[in-house]
Length: 110
Length: 114
Image: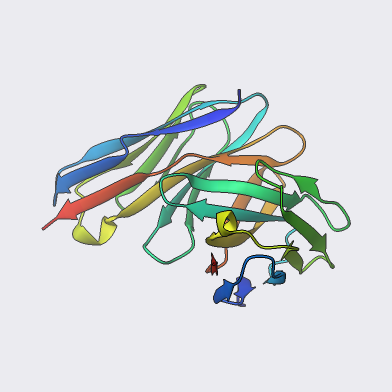
């Protein structure tokens, strides 16, 4: 069964405490993996697209990596404004199907 | 450049009523998507349109219909609303090609069916 699983469901960190969020997937014909940030009451905000194993992308304190089975979103020295829900999704098959994980709620304490 | 716009932002319906959610994008993207987001269940794909003139079912299509009116617009219709369709609905458009892709979301429509 095609599936995307994110862990942990929730993560509370102290400001400056680095950590990683995980997104594992089981789909056939991966075309790309997306990471998003979602603030309460708003639509998801696009962060990165990764296409092949070994690829890495960075934006400010965020770095996304991809293997054949999973992706990690590394957060370095987070600040309270990084608090949000982080979603990953995979685009797969030739029919442009997309599946989302259920997200990780990240909370950064000052 | 407005990106992806959705109307209305909020709606309350009675069971059995019908309505259409509107979505438009000005980024010249080929693919457009409708999702619903429920607490604890993440985003689930209702329908998508890989290109103008085509539509396909996603994970949860029952009770919905869609129309890809042109390249810019993709509407979602509830013919006979049910309380189970209470949710937040998001439209998204995707640029995919030339070795890359990005997906952008609208602000959402918060629908309550009583």
